[in-house]
Image (cartoon, rainbow, N blue to C red):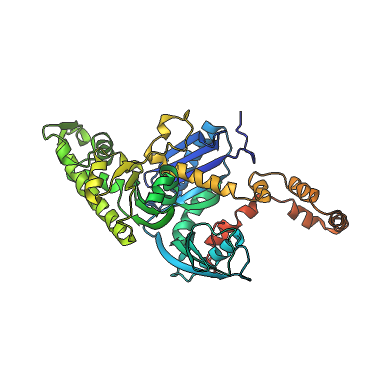
Length: 465
């Protein structure tokens, strides 16, 4: 039986385009607000390098394979997706905005904050760059500092600090091209560290101060939170794939063998392994079997992991919050499954550490396979998608849920004054056939206009709101 996609119970799809895998996750919320995963489709990724698409055809084929698998499992036709973006080109900066209200007793509304966000989107950037996210931090209302949510307050001057995340248009264009060639529409482009943080971090941790480290296949994403506000983001161009390459070179193995060794026997601390533990693997092309010491394997992995977390520690120091992170570090992503990684991170950073599993927002009857750090980004994309849907107006929701256009106009007429209805009926007779067809067109196109505008070469940097 097909899944019902309705305003009361929407279906959201997260598409994680990673360096080693492409995963499509289909989910609905149950009566308790938890995610019920309806389908999980995945395919090997051969067209992505360090978070950026480098081969359009290979990436498109993998997306089609993952989506087909997810559709089969969920019995739901997938048309729109929320997609993650990462890569070395991602950068962040801080900026301050000021908004002067009309009178001293004017009430601050959500529209005032949206106007400030739009002003931030007009910042001058280097050629080829665009703004991905504008994230408000603390607000100041008439010199009252540290206001987290000023809506409803009165004042004459509103100020705010913004965390602005930028990326290259070309990298985003390549993602968009792959998604559209797969027969899908991209409803939102979300920074992967933000998505991962939504699925594995708790509100208490973000309030106390925490560092999220998402070790993927091609990049290691870092996001720092304090007082419930994002303070710093960074993307480090080293992750699981480079560890596999180190094992290939250090132990003279094929890539599949090196990957299996890493997953099955990999340890981040050589001292936690015994020198006399030996792994025997088949030789290449009929050659004699090769024996590799567990200690040797751990030494190769340890050298690269120490390098990665030295850069993570540099980002922590650069953020200025190194002494305020009371909740320590949360490590997630496929690379977080290395044995003894928690101890290595605590030794390198001096901060308490836990491994982040995306289980807090999942219903209990989901498959155990999903309760894995490698799906933190995909599940986070779904959570971010639900956040956007919850903030939609009624008309926007009707567009999103593919309600018939006639239903939207009937609903609008119900609440219109009688004079307006009569006037509209008179005008209706004079509308030509072309305009009528346009009015009854696919309303979903309007939902994607903001996404399209972001990719166009305009002077104003659009966002996805």
